[in-house]
Image (tube, rainbow, N blue to C red):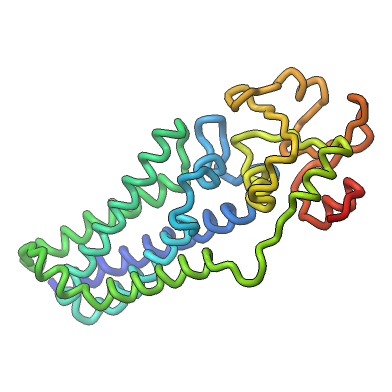
Length: 277
């Protein structure tokens, strides 16, 4: 029976590694959204980029996918520790499964609100549910009765470590070192020089650009190209031959002077617009 338990744990480790790699990819595309979209953007309603760069993709300023990667790291660690004595760690795995299921419901709720499905997120959800099922199988094999008190007691040190590292992540992503930069003057200058951003509310790179400017983005004129976005100007985008977002364009009296497709950092935008803060 112990040998069978080890085989199940090995399967759980393999599944967790797949989940970890998927979470790392989602974390990367959250902070560095690819211009052409991620590898799982298939349509308007089946899109990793939309879900992974939405307002629901961060909790306390940290990517949900990064928390997911941390969860999988701990899960792999626990299952590896459990290999010599599976019975000892089953309730700890159940505690981790419970946390995973709660996070899964959060993301599913976000997908319902956004009316979009994230395929890679769904893969992670399937893995989490499968891990829970395998944990229940282990409980039955070793005839372990569920006890919430025992589950908390056995998993207390792991939970403590998970909470501490999560708090450190939140601290790292929210503490502002040095003076916060203000780009009001640059944004106003760009507006005066006729620099526009043709974007989309479904565009991950556009979201990254808005986050880069912060509150200063209010001074930049953005044209919404997606028909489902707020105040869309789809016909204008078609007339301007906008094929990808964001597209930066400098216009004088409605006449295009130059354009750039893709992400530009602050220094590149200064050069493009001819503005200095």
